[in-house]
Image 1 (cartoon, helix red, strand yellow):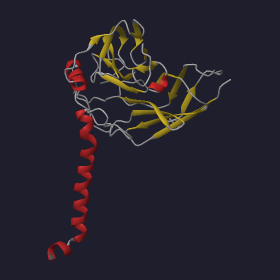
Image 2: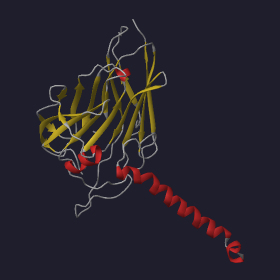
Image 3: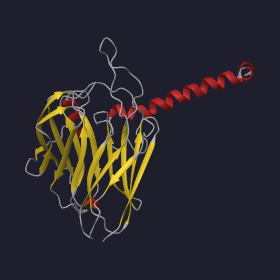
Image 4: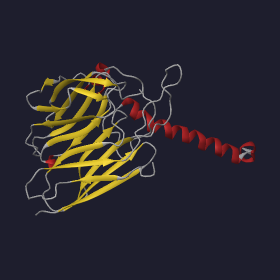
Length: 172
Length: 110
């Protein structure tokens, strides 16, 4: 006890350091696991995440749930050939009544050949009136781009398009 | 890069009750990409990029997005929105270095 009291300052510092480390790992773990819904507020640090193949991404996000072909319901607008992979515009529109009873809950944009295939995940609400979102993507090279829509009843729909990229836009 | 975090929101100039409008937003941000060392190995560090977008209307959340480094520099997003009453649309962007960037647009019916 005497020893502890004598070095009070040092040990407190050590404790704080350990707490800090714990805090950091607590913040980053959910991101590595990629569990949905963990990214509320500040979504964690921009730590380097491991390279991932698209099958692994789909498994991580959807856990083997069946994904149906939704090419009749999803309109995927993007260029056939993108000269510059750093800025590739995409618009995704899903036909849906967007009422509280039936709406599109999430739209995922996944480009197969990127280092981390999931580009973005949008969580929509019925108040939007239409399930339409747009963004600018970075594509590392010629790749398939998928838009996956998760409906409020849990159905997963996918639409896919190949984009030819002349100059890659991802260092990673 | 003094203007990092500047948020611009564009909405149609005339909106009627019941319209579904297309909102376009842009935020000035570097969206750092993964760097590689000489051996080609990705460098592990806290990259600065926007990883979250939150859109609210009169305080109600209408859209959220989790974004990654696979989104272009100076990210542009568009989305549909059907305002039920006049009010303020607010878009908040959060980045991995604690940055919080906000922009608002007032929606009135004509």
